[in-house]
Length: 167
Image 1 (cartoon, helix red, strand yellow):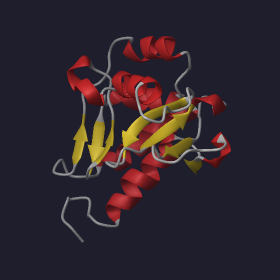
Image 2 (cartoon, rainbow, N blue to C red):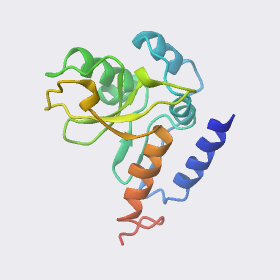
Image 3 (cartoon, one colour):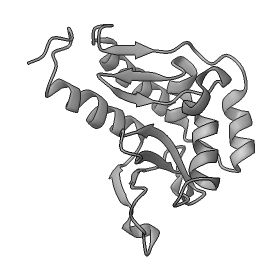
Image 4 (cartoon, helix red, strand yellow):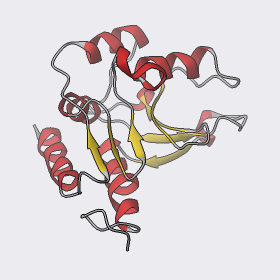
């Protein structure tokens, strides 16, 4: 229950932004996320699933969180996961779940190997680094909600006001 309360608080922060810089996708009302969990063999964290069920794909000032739909083509979560794990030049470790691109071929990922109490850390996977050890992959946030708070909200507020005007 506490995770839901925290998710709703984070969503309320996002809702303060103008539609000129905030895009919120439609809700997921079916079992797509659960089917994806079966497909990849990992449970997704509760905060991630809750927010995606409210807004399937969303972005703030250019920072995007992928959605899950055949209409999204190459930017659908299932397509990105399969590409990064089976087709990319340097394949991602299976427990890393890419959810947000940086525009340079790198991704913020959920580290599904470390789910505890319904949450997991966010790591930053750089496609052009050959990691000797997975411990060398930068853990940037303790969970998805913290990532939204820092990367989406705080970093956006350094450049834009809530109304979308540049500072």
